[in-house]
Image 1 (cartoon, helix red, strand yellow):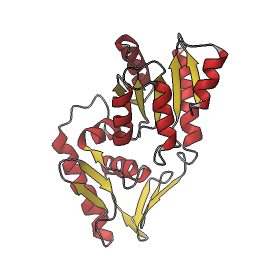
Image 2 (cartoon, helix red, strand yellow):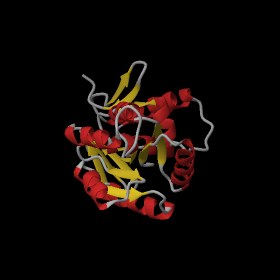
Image 3 (cartoon, one colour):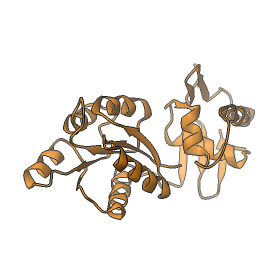
Image 4 (cartoon, one colour):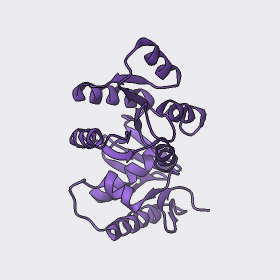
Length: 229
């Protein structure tokens, strides 16, 4: 699945440039133009990494980084600070606030993408695991097979990608828009109700071989891979 990167930057031309290049490199992108919006999006979307400008309206990048590090749910979230402040003291302050890396403007986009991939790899050392598991569901990424309680589950390609996305973030609720963005191709023109169709197919396939519905529907919000109580 595409790693989600949150760009926290109030310079619109730079945001557009970053979005274009990151999407070209296979990332999904979200945006926030100030520190308060960044903290809201981080809590809601849990991005895989944050590109964080130092000088932001409302809440500074330094304070945003500190709050990311204070919260148990986001403590290990990768943060790269983007700033025009290149003095050694500024670098030290940025890193001491909890940033994983510090990139001074202007910067090389190729180098930035490489640094981004590196911090995501360090934060998700098991991202390339060959097996994904939740409850009694197992996905073998090499053999491209799924089983539940030891019984094979037969899935179409889209349902397989959908389940893989859920298995990588169990219990997290995804909106239909997020699922379209992160599971389907960004160029695909697909209606939101198509997500519901594939969720029903995935739910049926899982429930045919096991007891208990593992796909939780959150009304007016979206779906999660979670034990339904």
